[in-house]
Image (cartoon, rainbow over all chains, first blue to last red; front, side):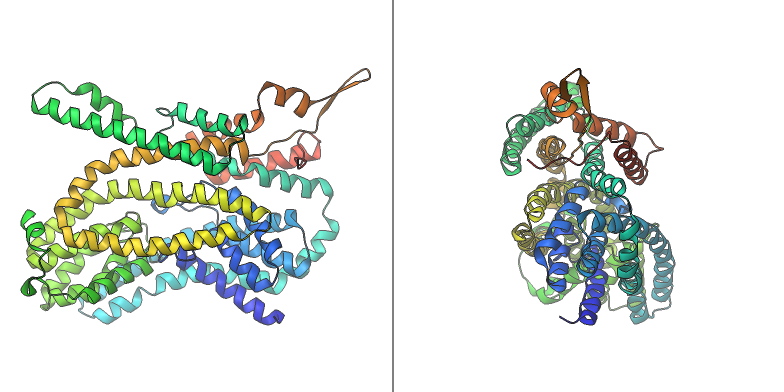
Length: 269
Length: 283
């Protein structure tokens, strides 16, 4: 594929990926799924998948829930794959350049969500004025903004990225690339830490221990652990349903059902 | 509210102002827009308006009713979009049946269900699925293998179908099922979390890698810190300690995830510079 066509396709991929992720979620924005397409565009699937896999593991558990802004690992993957294909830079460099780009675009994300507020008011004003087509049209600005969020950084990367990276690679010392690779293998811990806060960890610390021992001591593959997890989940679900049935019966009999209620309590925090 | 549930399943013509095709175009619009025009004030409100504006127009030919209905939907709404379809299916059935009279009930249903539905939806769609699929596909990808990514795309397509299905279920069975489901959802969410926590335990041991190349020299005897000491105490000891530290940091208001990421970058660079931390040799 000619370079210029690859450049155009990679920019379109990046711009579309964010809209897909926030809406239809067919391709979604996971490093491995966007990495698959980026690899096909750049013509080197195995290298692309290695970079994507690194970012995928790094991003485990990092979820932008309730409108929170989180590092853009999908964009980081596209940037890393593109630059690695253009400059021949290794995994460490791909991660080292991709990650900051992913971190910087968070600021844009916040700006867009603030700007969308004005659009929402504009749309409602159109509704009140009974200009319903305009009300619908103005809402296209939101997805357009989100596409631009990736379009702008990608234009910069495609135009000045490769030469800047090639120059940088000549001066960068070994401890620095090593340090970035180490950071890459430590960073999944952030997502894991976030996951532990989303979930009722205090109540189910024993489940965490089972999972840990399964892998650390027994080397069970992840799918095996997931099946054990599913078994524990079924057991928990049945217990909870039984408890709530008993609870319902107890309440119906006018008895005090306080202790079954207490059990469910600490999940909400 | 319950007579909606009793009457909607029969396709008696006067009840249905909307064809199946029109309803599906509404849910597809919602699936496309999702949080693409998300704002901090009303969050998914404008997205719901944009998606349902055409079907609502058909329900409310009168301009004033239509504007009132739109205003109702412009209000704050936020849930997992995959589950949101089910709520919106139920409210659409209510509006189709009762018209503008249902306004307050529609708002009440949306407000009371978006929380519990987000609880279970976020856990499954944005935590459980990406954690399990991500670690499987991620490890395959590290070897240059795209199979995991392809499987994930297939899963996404199944989800696409499931989201339309959930909307249909919400529309057909109406308010009652959706409300009773909400009670079971909390048990379901908690059970799903148990599965998630099991996987998290695995991730700490396998995905997080902290390796030290330090060596002790006792006369002629060399003792490698990692293989000779740490691994003997417990496998994945350092990752477990780092995970615990990060968990504690994230618990305090001052440490946002992004700050923790920067902190880890600094630790890794300083550790690499002084030779305290190293790249883990592949076994």
